Image (cartoon, rainbow, N blue to C red; front, side):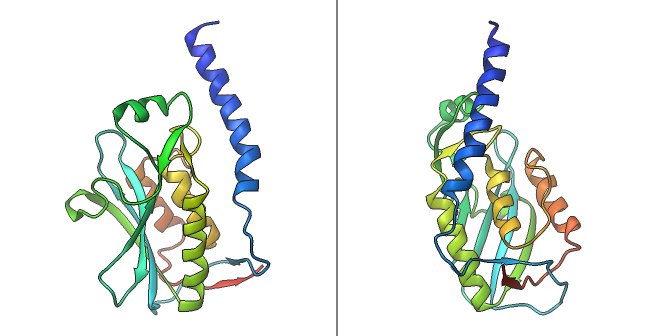
Length: 194
């Protein structure tokens, strides 16, 4: 079997395993799970936010979220990256590698920013979304360039918020710009009970 065929087989096997394992690991433990219906466009800004961000990187680029309270300078950062150095990143193209889900190099530096889309939330909705982000971070132990990458990670957050999401294989800058366009630039999201 050629190396290309082996990689393809591994990718399909990994995708199948991920499809089976992820939904069960992402199950929300609360009976009061919420999700946004269709986000309603409004110009009002809530006291909390999630900012979907893209930045440059040595390869494709990277997407992540900043989230927090609008009246505070401190931000929380969540994203999905391979843990370690270049070797981990390269191995992530053929198999899963350990991940990190917090801030990575460049996530706090405005000079690397290429796109962003900030969505505001009420306090009650922010508690639900922020808890989901923390849960997603806790349940994302691996990274794979093909299956569980940074765009799929922030796409899960956007989906939880009820936003329409682009294809996860879209380049980071285009992903964030498409996310904003697909949702009509909505600035405020209201979650509703499922």
